[in-house]
Image 1: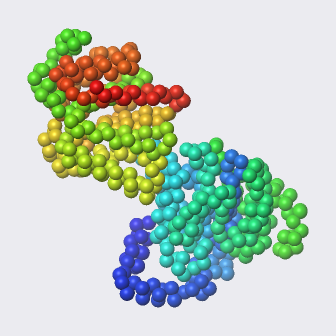
Image 2: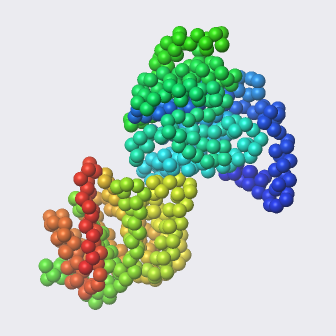
Length: 268
Length: 221
């Protein structure tokens, strides 16, 4: 972390005209569609969080890509931070691992030092400071590639589930019931918003998450196909963080696929 | 009571009396409550409410007023920085305790200044489910009042006088007396030691379940 920050400071802490010249030159070297930006190993992703009555469900696909190659179809993109919180990220793997390692470390150190979990707001503020180190990525790439995270928690102090989404410049906000990120996110926004309801149960939320994962796999090249690889789904509620078993996810997927003629036609 | 105390104390009244003429603080933990009684010319009390139902209290006693103001500013800087890096909700008594202890341990002025003039602290972290109190001496030595019968005295008093006074207070068995009675005993005891002036007292009930915490009694005489 220190090295990265120092490196960035050394590289970009330039004053006056020179700063502007270098920035213009840097941005000009590689735009969004140029090869240089596409060759890094990144998590071709859809991750999202949906609130339900009493908790929040967090889901992520399994694909990691590098250029035109699939590096892995078994990646786990939902990362537990504390007994009541997790993050899920999309984008370059170096940034994701940087965020995961630092968030995990700060949560553990805080608990060890002061005997209490870092609050949801504390986690969000610290995550913001981590993202600020990577501002230059956003100048040269699509907004989701650098590793935009979502933070899902059950806030013990407020006694309610919370989802916090981050913008590419570190700004964060709290959407009312649903947030996500990744290249496959655009294809599921409307679906989830259309089907969500305020009194949605845990079971229905898991079902909706699986449905969205299937749609995302069909709609985005970078997202793993849920018919082949099961997505990872986790729940956070008053009792804490827990994974949803593969059997449950498989049951929902198999049941949903039967009624999805359009999607099946599209991807078969 | 005063005669009994005087016999028990066997103190050199002039020595202790002169030491107590400036500032001091007593903190005592009983079975069910923690009591704090303070008298200081320039007592500083800082209250924080990082979340609903939780209060962090910092009492600074003794020391030059400039030194106290410096440390008050340092605590404010810490809380402001915390808002940026984490959240005000994450502020705890233990965090301030660590910060002040470290600050005083590394502070050249406090370490080498004349003892009675150095600032000392009592820090309280009061939640419905727990009550934690810490004491920090002028040189950064610190301790938590964990067990029943733990007592600490801070202020312009020699170590010997502090020990004598602590023994005298413990002989009072305050745990068997009502809440206000303990407070009056403290005041009475301090009066016996020619220690007069404004006193502040606070008592905190120690609750395990966290549902029936009584409001602390604050009284100034």
